[in-house]
Length: 122
Image (cartoon, rainbow, N blue to C red; front, side, top):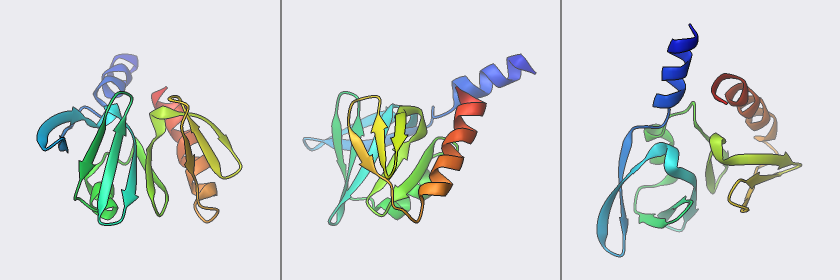
């Protein structure tokens, strides 16, 4: 069972996504995304090193991303649970030093999902 769990953890977020930066297409892994931010009609995908622009709406990203790894914590944000360092009130502190808002309506569900993630995959 331990070996199966280890493989499952390693495979989490290994699906590839196609995104754009400076008009060029790039392929990234889901696990490399720290968070996604909705800005008007676009979304911005933030990794530790790069920012990518997408015309895919946040709702569609929710459908595409692995729900074991990602959570929509606010109307403007989807966050990678693996990038979460701490949660304080309605702010998530990421391992990159950035802060993400959590809506008060989703706070309890987010905390529950994060604890579940932390227990199973960390």
